[in-house]
Image (cartoon, rainbow, N blue to C red; front, side, top):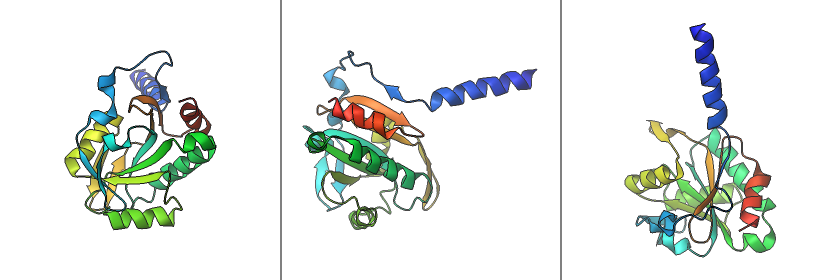
Length: 190
């Protein structure tokens, strides 16, 4: 009996942990919840230094990956490509597709640039970012992304894609199996 209750509780937890989270459309987030308030310093695939606030004025579709990943990250990159294809052309011009490395030690600007080229996601609207470990962890906490290094080149991590509006306010998150149509629709409505 106790075993059945445990299995039922685990199943309910699993179902709810994999569903998509969406902020109510009429709920206006306070300006102090903007991702642009983070002061961390970042470096892109071209070795250009920037802060997240430099991305203000564009919608962001953001995911955390690492380039040596052979399991979940290729799926996340594929999801991001599908989302980009489903965003209306005029909205895509107002959107940056951001890939943030959780492995800044290995994902140098050169590695990120090569990864972008290999995956045919170079140039606009694609942006790859890396930073120090503390800044990556801070951003991961904001995005509710959990990750843990399990070997020198392997991480266990959450699979979450997040949409931010032009003011840096989170408007949608998709976790697990991502519905590209729904994520793109969230961007198209901004």
